[in-house]
Amino acid sequence: MDRVDNIQASKQKKVSDNNQNRYDFIIVGQGLAGSVLAYSLMQKKQKVLVIDEEAQSSSSRVAAGLCNPVVFKRLTKSWMIDEVLPFAKAFYQNQETLLNEQFYFDVPLYKLFVDEKEQQFWKQKSNEPHLFDWINDKTEFPFDATHLTYPFGAAKTLQSGFLKTASWLSKFKNYLIDNNAYLNQKFDYSKIELIENGVVWNGYRAKKIIFCEGYQCTHNPYFDWLPFKLTKGEVLTVKFKNLELKHAINKGVFVLPYEDNYKLGATYNWDELDEVPTQEGKEQLLKRAARFIDDDIEIISHKAGVRPTVSDRRPLLGIHPKEKQLAVFNGMGTKGVMLAPYFANKMVHLMLKNEPLPSEVNINRFIKKEA
Ligand SMILES: Cc1cc2nc3c(=O)[nH]c(=O)nc-3n(C[C@H](O)[C@H](O)[C@H](O)COP(=O)(O)OP(=O)(O)OC[C@H]3O[C@@H](n4cnc5c(N)ncnc54)[C@H](O)[C@@H]3O)c2cc1C
Image 1 (cartoon, rainbow, N blue to C red):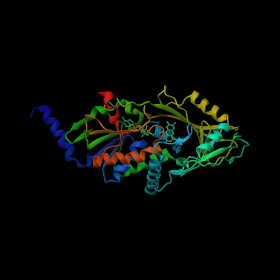
Image 2: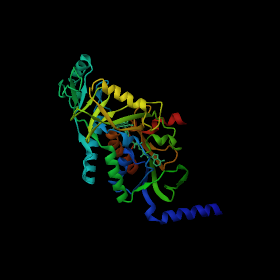
Image 3: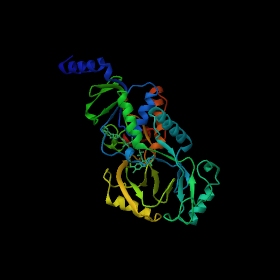
Image 4: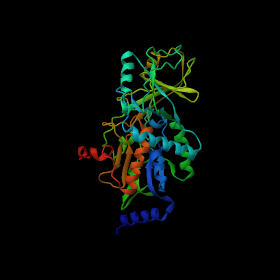
């Protein structure tokens, strides 16, 4: 053994001798993806360490957290809704019991029709049996029209709701801290040491590192080849002078009653990929709202984030093609609240039982392109 080998061996011995720094999994990122995955692994008695740099903004903290079971544009069911939504609701209910606070709220989401054609299209679609559980067939006029213009009425989605993502993430972070499972630090990729049957990072040893960095995965040298097609989004928190809504509404933009205020969103921008709220974003949202809300709007806050959206609109799960100690759980796109719990469970099965992932979400689908 030469001197370098000796140093390496003694370093590894030091790490492996210190049981405190040994984990089953290191998870990078405490957004929705990393948090849901961390708890799903903890439920299976795995020892996890979650590392997050606590950046000022993140997609998960900015998100309104809406779960809309239908795609309004085409009036189709959201992808895999029958499987993912019950799973998501059960997961967040479990968190509510664990953390003793309500985070998930059922709320009817009304589509306000822009014209008679849209109203008729909804009516026609509501007769399709596969949509019976997801949209109501009745055209209603449930809102006071003094400050809301909707001459063609509205109809509601069934089983919609929202997660207070920022509140849950902050409570769950405390839970991780209490369980010695959290580290506030920027993850430096150059400190990864791949060893036989595991990985060491900065003195912490684990069987695997699972990366959940959201859009910042594009800076990860092991997974920067994944075909993200990122989307910036902006959301306002607002107060209305007169308008009072108990339900969520959508007419090009959504308005969601949220604590004592409302969330108004969201924008989609594929060119400017940063977390800076812009004047253009704000004006766009206010302009769209003004098309159907006739009231004074006071802006309480304005936030931006980058959604981890993918070229084929499907999540990105799997193990690195060469370095088996490294894995990724990402690509939740515009629907992280609904998708993360179901697919975290798939990831757990891959990690603990080597069960294959559904091919639609497996990163293997892109490997040929990389080679
Ligand atoms: C404006 C807007 C509105 C949205 N509305 C909804 C909605 O209504 N419903 C819905 O389901 N989804 C919505 N989304 C999408 C949703 O936010 C995402 O699907 C989801 O939050 C992505 O979670 P994530 O954990 O993958 O990524 P992020 O939330 O980006 O989390 C990644 C985490 O990793 C950390 N990190 C990254 N790199 C490092 C590093 N090197 N070291 C340490 N830490 C690191 C970051 O600090 C961050 O905390 C919205 C998104 C936006 C932007």
